[in-house]
Image (cartoon, rainbow, N blue to C red; front, side):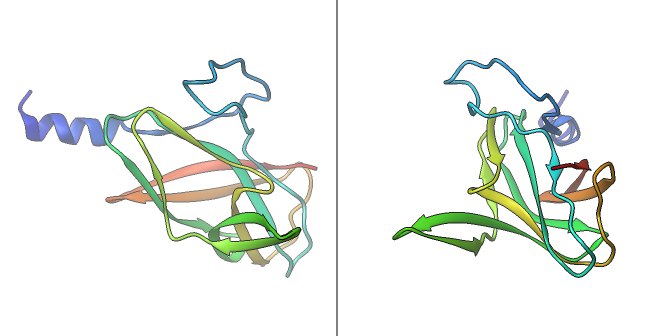
Length: 148
């Protein structure tokens, strides 16, 4: 296979694996210690909710996660929660770089996707479709369970 075809093949093969296991034993040096089942909390129409999951890059190229779309929300953005001087703050994040064979955990009090101004209420048991935008030109779909 020539280099151009090999690169195209790797782009097709390079999938984001979103971990859906409630508990997983992993070697501390290989992946993050926490495994986050893709989920978000219930919320009424007009309010906000956050999406939590683990983003894994199984490819040999660096992945850049730069945006998100959620049909039930007026907007969806990447955020990071931080504690500073005993106060919690939340800041938008332009993009997340995931090195080859590495993972990034999106969890409470850390990185997360903020879905704001919900068009419809979301309830426990619902499944929400989240589209992750990955550079250079890829969109991965994540099915997210609504739960407490």
